[in-house]
Length: 164
Image (cartoon, rainbow, N blue to C red):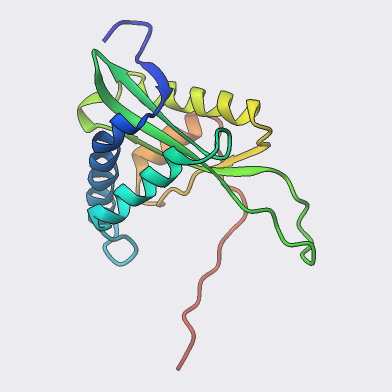
């Protein structure tokens, strides 16, 4: 890969097979972290998701891919979050969640950084004020990666299963 890093561009329908494989490989890795939290989605559901996102109006959400010599090495999704309802106390600020996946053999070569930089530029150009990334606490590599790129814990989620 050249020193300038991979090319990052908006995903197209021709990238669908690579996007599906990236999502399924990411699911396998997360299953190894915590099988009580994660699942392996059905291939058809993943195809349907990416087909829908790629077919949306421009600017709603984004799927960007990093490639080198015609091979997709990774992707980042930027998915807008709904604004809080008017009856809630949170201020409405355009926000999105990102999901980044890089092929294991391409890690440590700037692919993830290039994807996050491109996601940041896309979000800024589309009026998004906050980006969040859901990271499993046991995924030390992901925690380090996102921290290195300026992400930090925000708030705390509390969970309880109802008795009964």
